[in-house]
Image (cartoon, rainbow, N blue to C red; front, side, top):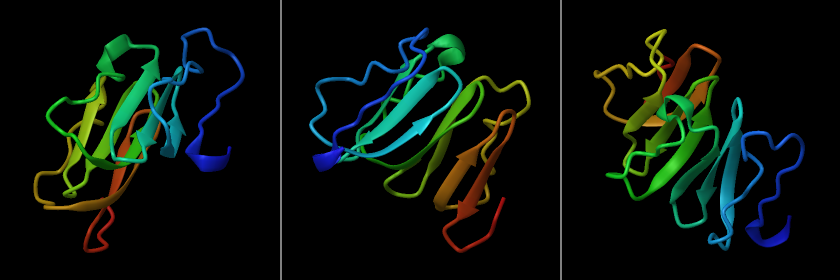
Length: 124
């Protein structure tokens, strides 16, 4: 929608369509399994929908995010400084971000895995 307005439609069984009304403009959105996450235009990351496994609980110690990815039971985000963080279910080690990468530029989350692109172009 125009001006960064976010709208969601379809099955709302876990409230994943209930876009927070206190955000004026969004810059990005991802949909995972029964949850939705959006990046507000100012860098705030918000997730809503099924709260199982803590995957909607965005880490509170990061104020500004640049990217977000939603998997089956986990969520990942890249902080504005390039730090990659993941939260939710770690049953397949999908939250274990490699510690030897200083900055990330992209992240994707699958059903039971996470992939990231290091700022230098290395795919992990």
